[in-house]
Amino acid sequence: MGMLDGKVVAITGAGRGVGRAIALCAAAEGAAVLVNDLGSGTAGEGTDQGLAAQVVAEIEAAGGRAIANGASITDPRGAVSVVEDAVAAFGRIDGVVNNAGFLRDSIFHRMSRVDWDDIIDVHLNGYFAVAKAAAPHFKEQGSGTFVHMTSTSGLIGNFGQANYSAAKAGVIGLSTSIALDMQRFGVTSNCIAPFAWSRLTETIPTDTEEQKQRVARIMEMKPEKIAPLAVFLCSDAAKSVTAQIFGVRKNEIFLFSRPQPIRSAHHAEGWTPESVQDIMLPSFRPSFQPLQRSGDVFSWDPI
Image (cartoon, rainbow, N blue to C red; front, side, top):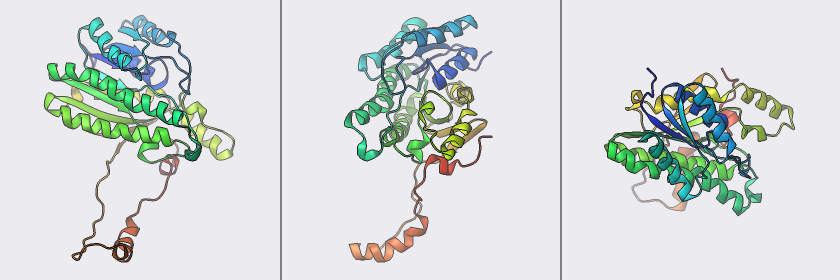
């Protein structure tokens, strides 16, 4: 008996990397899998419809069930087709893994509006569109799971990724709202921040020794390490887990906090700019968050 026996799971961006690893693991655990992938390059250019078909062939060769879908989730009709094709082929939909995406890195003040819009469109608008297409099915059957890929670029921060960081921070808000709105229908929604060497991390520069060491650490983190948590979150064993933010780095699993108040200040006479400076600032300053990158927080080698 597999953990996903009898379930149908749709996975976007499943032709390569993390998505492919999740698709193979879900199929091995008994799920019928819709493998969605437009087949675009690392910056969102071009298409390759063969990528999804290759993953389907791997699943079928291992005795599993799968179909391919080559739609772009940035096209509202394409996003709907991800769900509709799964239901047409397998009779239902039980889980959605929002994983599709690409990068357009640039220093903030040099970033074009096109690069901003394109990243937001796939990582946030596309995730919303696929989730919304699945929601009526989940509501009707009284069950369903969403797993959305976020990033420590959105949780913590990184250089040259204003578009990606904003989108991935937005994914956390989207997932939390879905969890709240759909809880009464037995639906869960969670996020995973994956650490893995993939075609996206291959774009990281290696011009300095520090960058070379960073890439060497990332290369130890295989996409297959992410899959078990994603598959678990799609299973009935995770029915009580919702609105959480996880991270996976090699053999480590992390649970991230959502922002909560950490200090408060009250002034009975009301605040003025001067009293904010004189009272609030010295009171709050010891608790101010430092400006950090993901690599500053996760500074030890993958375990």
